[in-house]
Length: 414
Picture 1 (tube, helix red, strand yellow):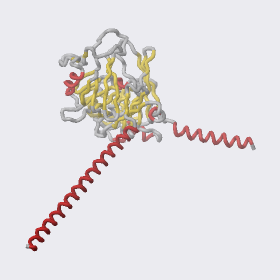
Picture 2 (picture 1 turned 180 degrees about the vertical axis):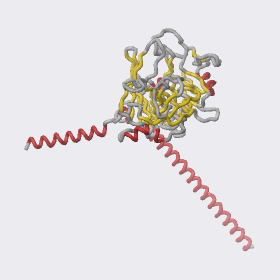
Picture 3 (picture 1 turned 30 degrees about the vertical axis):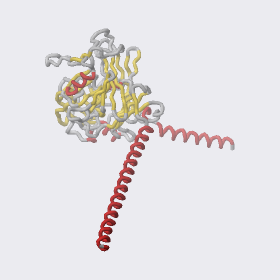
Picture 4 (picture 1 turned 90 degrees about the vertical axis):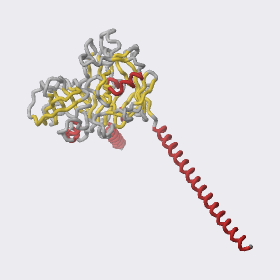
């Protein structure tokens, strides 16, 4: 009897354990990303643990499908189109579109992919854009994230980039695909999570911020039309793109410390800023909106290089004729950043309260309660004033009637 009782409890314990595990398990794929720090230019972070047609797949926030370089031999092309991918190339690129299972990255699932027609671009891109963008001939269900969701029951259109770890002159991080990472589920009480809504009208992944702060100065992020600039996020390279229309404001913000050569004959368009960087070769800049303040890093061009004392003043900032900003994920290196295409939300996770300040839910609820109380108070005051005016009008009307009656009585007496 004791053995039977013991076995029942063991089975019950195992069932509870399995149920608990089934509700907490994450169904994402985890890919390692790693690049060395050397004397040359910092290489782009890429997925490097896949034996595939492309040895380096660069996750792309601006491309909705797989996009391979011209050297990859493939066939079965459908048609081509001219597109603009502003995070990669500001002019039109010629792309061929196909539907095939040329890649083993997804267990030979057939997916739509593109190919650069000319050798301007040398990389392969792992498209993570959840909208068609410039790829006008595609349909929503042909985008890579939608393709994968159709093939796999538990797949969610959610992906994230972990914070950077630097050890022995090697930068490494992880890319997660297919589900929300546990940092954004189980560890909410152990870290700080800030989120912003990806505007449905936006072409690319991005957020709106009201202000930008640098060196104890704050400036509004408003365009000449008094609307907020969109800030898009990129993973394709490390360029920080500012709209030219923001140049005067940024000069004001930096006390005119920054200059660049805008000649068409100069290849290097990067901004050079005196007294801009700290001893660690980066400057802190803060984005502010109604929900959070998030502090990002703008690096010296050689921060992640073994070169010493060269280009001390050169930033990664470039001005372009865009009406939006493009902030690369190198600026968010201290955050775990998640992109949720299921709910159009971008989230930032950290344990460092100095770089992310978020309004607590209680504070937001209290603010709503206060706003509700103020509204109720105003409503009550309006009602009281209305009742008071009504009483005043009623009394005045009665007095007029009495005056008329008094006059009538006086004439009758005469």
